[in-house]
Length: 379
Image 1 (tube, rainbow, N blue to C red):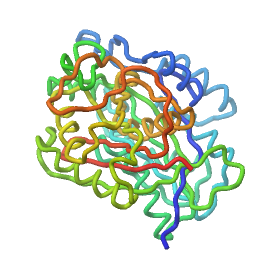
Image 2 (image 1 turned 180 degrees about the vertical axis):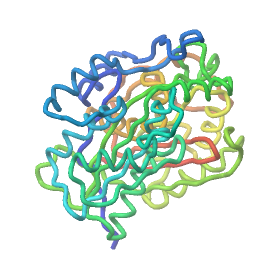
Image 3 (image 1 turned 135 degrees about the horizontal axis):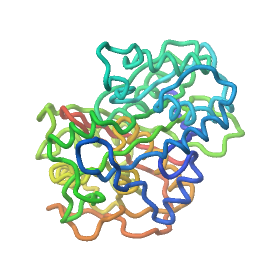
């Protein structure tokens, strides 16, 4: 019999707050981190979700006042997200450390003639791991925008395989000129706050965040909650370097495999935390895939209207918020959605509503045809 794997603790650092409670309260009030920000000197401001640097430094200094190591802005976000978990759970020689990120310390490249050591993802992961005394070699998951969901899957499967007894998974990406310029070259940046699945959507807002979860096969009796990782899958349909499959093949297969492993059918799923980038093709592809899986009636939201697209952090952050929804028995609306803008029906949440949530489906899709899905069960 395969080991049962649980998420028993988590934390996040976002523009809406530096812990889960502050984020949840802000979301209940419908607050969003998306606003106009001047990111590139010679270009107009973009709508994006950015953590206030002054507040970030204040929070970091509050907890790491005695620190003498220089940390980048992203590293401070990651350290703050992980600290409460490390304080509550033991790091042993059998504990895995996973980092999910797409760009890491990409900002270090600005105005540099030589490649800084800290820009390597392996160096970033090792720096965080060493600070908290992890004894195992860090594992890096960097697979475009599915990285955060895949990191949960990698931790689950490695624990089940007997490689580790437990795992800390952290995820983070920050706003940078590089990322904004890249998406802008695709003409994928929205002209205003993004509107996932809406008829008038015209692109994404980039965001930044850090998130962390603790995953174990042996939860203690003192945990405040448990979410079993029932099933997972990641499929690459190799459709296009940046465009999603028009038929949703990769996402459909990922959901199907995850639900098969979880032994749940469409009528069991209580809530879908979808990717929902607010680009024309992504949202349409997702609607097709969900309908192919007969999930069109399940309540669904995208968190991008609150946080923007946080790249490698998005999947983990949105998984945390979906678990909070289950604990609080509350479905959050898909912010900025007004009128259906996809060809297939979806049950998009429009206002805060009470609901019993036991089975959660979390999905993600990204560049290069990558797709991922995980099924979580509230225990």
